[in-house]
Structures are given as structure tokens and as C-alpha cells.
Image 1 (tube, rainbow, N blue to C red):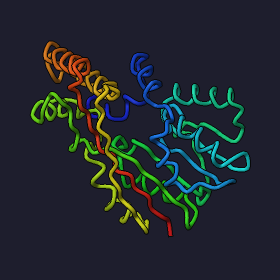
Image 2: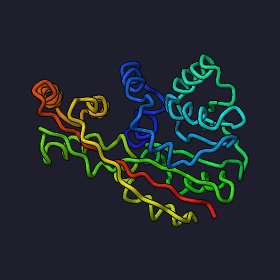
Image 3: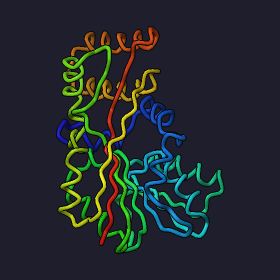
Image 4: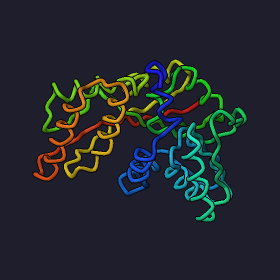
Length: 261
């Protein structure tokens, strides 16, 4: 893959090992309930999950808006969309549709809510994407954005220097790794009002976040950004830390809601 476009291409084509990790990682659970609450969903609403991935949030949103509502899951990865659509059919959710972003043709002012989780750090043109999303919402519609800011990440026992070097080596995976801190100003520029910014941070001490780090390692290997033996030693250190109960991973998430006037 081209290093300059890798930040998006690695979501278009996902190798099986990484796909399996995503399916393990992306499952709706109780700790995501506040994200649903912030959307302020109601029966019969029309909602889009922009960058829906495997579709776990889109399906939960569909359950909340009920059969009189309509939910669209939008993504650039065919595997995600096909698997999510099959799961939706298996669960009998008929008011949920998964569409490739390149073929999405939602009408302007057609959405009551737009949900966008861990997507904007990868888009080629942030303002263009935000403007398109803004156009889809009805006046009074609400957008909720959740995104990372890798400048705040903590990985122990690596410490600050090694952590910084690791994520610098993984930088081609992101268009804007510090997207979280930039979203407030970007949303104001597009025209949103009542912008509320919160930061959600949980310390993972059990090793649940190791999948995120392994994904970053796979990106580093793509471009030999760190020597293979060094990368192997770094990951082995974390695996041992999990065993020794000395592991700690923190990746703060910016949780932002805003209203289209």
C-alpha cells in the first residue's frame, strides 16, 4: 500500500487476522451505554452510523429507535458491511440498511441523528466530511462524534519515550492522530451549535486493549518503521506485563455532541 494513502486504504482492505480482532473488539457492552444515552434517541427516528465498521452500534441504535425508525450503517469496507447485514437479517431487524459510503445517497435534511465513532482520524478531508454530515441532518438534528487523540495515550510498562516512538512509527495509519483536540473548532466552523465536549478515559489493566496495540504493530510492519526484533520484544514485554498484572493502557476518547441549528 502507498504510505501516503495508507490511513484510508487499510480500512478498505483488512486482512483476516485483523478482521478477527475487530470482531472481538467491536461488541456492544454496558460501558458503551452512555454513548447511546448521549444520542437522545426516540422511537421512529432516522439515524446514520457513519463509519459503522462491523455494525454493532448501528444494530443497537436500530433496537432503540424501533421498527418505525430507520437506521443506515455506512462504511468503506465491504466485509464489514456484508457481515453486519447478515447479522441484522439473522436478528430480524428489518429497518436497518448497510450501505457502502461510495454508493450512499442519503437525502439532505433526512437524519434526526448522526453517530460517528473513531472515524474522523482517518478521513482525507475533515472539513469536507463534516460539511457533508451537516447537510444530512435536519435542523435541530444532533451529531455525536467519538474519536481518539493519540497524543494522550499511555502504555505501561513501556513508559513515555517508547510509547511515543511506537505510535510515531504507526503514524501512516492516521490522517490526523490528534483529531480529538481539533474537533470543537472544526464543528464550530461548519456551523454546529450547543457543542458539548467531554473526555472519556478508562484504564485497561486486564489486557483488553492489547488488540489495539497489535493492530498498530501490524501497520508498523507494513513499512518496516521499526526493526522486527525490536517490535517483537516490545509486544512480548506487554504480554508478560499482562501476565504479571503490571499492564496499563489508557486511550482517552473525546465524546462530542452538537446540534444543527
